[in-house]
Image (cartoon, one colour):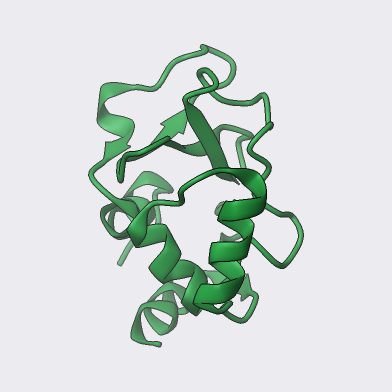
Length: 135
């Protein structure tokens, strides 16, 4: 995948193989949640892993640990689901029923205005800038 090759050129990544639509659907049914379309597409490429090491992020999956935990408390409120974390400990979340991906500053208990992304791919596109990784 070209996106993964591009990320590997900016920092080491350890990613799991993707999962099937059936695995994603089963996860959603069991957990009574709906994963954003962009993140579902990503899960088919990579079911979680570590990106842009050492300063990067960890993304959670539906088959490989760590799994997405809809009860993770490191989120603004129960309307959000945690799908990953930055090396700083801040979590990557989405609001249930929406495509938007955000970074939740755990220490401050807020999502900064400039840390909202329209969908998962816009989040990925901004990630190297967010982490201070030069192109």
